[in-house]
Amino acid sequence: MTKAIGMFSGGLDSLLAIKLIKEQGIDVDVLHYNIGFESLHLDRQIKRKAAEIDRADIERKLDVTIQEIDVTEPFLQVVLHPKHGYGSEMNPCIDCKIFILQQAKAYMEAHQAQFIFTGEVVGQRPMSQMLHTMHLIEQRAGLRGYLLRPLSAKILEPTIPEQQGLVDRERLLGISGRGRHEQLALARQYGLSFQQPAGGCLLNDPSFSLRLKELLAHTPEPLLTTTDVMLLKLGRHLRLADNLKIIVGRHEVDNDYLIKYAAGRWTAAVRDIPGPTVVIDGDPDDAQFEQIAQITANYTKAKDADSVIVDFLRGDEQRAIAIKPDALLNPNKWRIGE
Image (tube, rainbow, N blue to C red; front, side, top):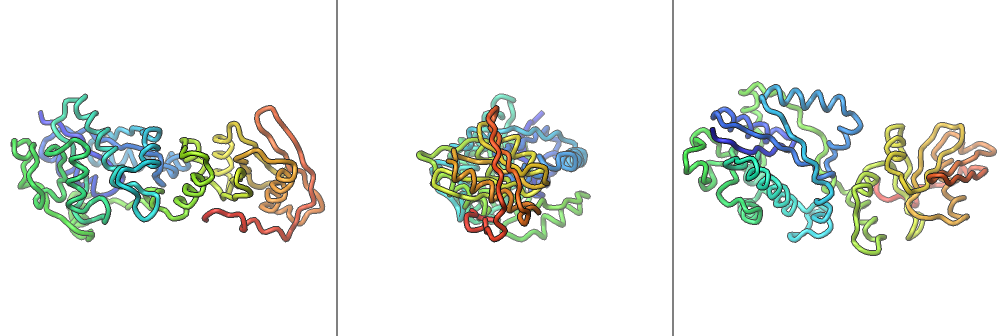
């Protein structure tokens, strides 16, 4: 039996591609590579139960199991050193596609599959889905002739599985461009009720990209960790000095995740008063501890109080600072992005 590897991006096009290949009786392993920068990934962490229901519904409709493979750690080097450069923000789209397809190629060979397919549509995205770029990505990934795009197959050269008769080319499509009418019509035909997820890759997001650029600008050499990436997704970021930044939680979920990822860093919170958890990236001096205490209090309803105590913790280290909050303080002057 012919076996193929289907790349699941989370969008409608990849679902349609899976459906087109499966209806030809081809066995499909569906893979989703988590690069760590998907906004949907954070949604899954925050709203895991709802996301698991959505994923289960997709798997039921398509009669597949989606395998999630985390490649965040090795992908960080792609973000730092993209051979083909960035898009409009910090998005190394071409290098990202090549990297993920190289991972999928290794999986294909290990599981004795005959080809890989994606939901890509020629001309849909300006950086990575133009025809010449798609050829470049296929070549650099080592998949020349073995990467099928079912939604655009009829306007592309036949792949090796098509030439060998493993895939019926006449049952594939010839969609191109940014329009969505054909895909939506096909979704209705298949009975797929699908709501396109909000957001996308955070490396395309101007605010997140600004935070990332700012972090790298204050790092002695290009260095990025998975903890850095997670913290960049959370809270409000304030740069107080070249070697000192704080992250202020926006809500309870932010606070919980900030505590989880704060290992080795100071945290701050106002004692006995609801408010944010603040993570300190750097080693503050006494004056900076006082400044951070003022900022922490400013984000609570106690900013008009006569006195509050701000507790600082780092492992077994503790300190407390009593302050009179400065109601006129404006933390936004230190803010990085939104």
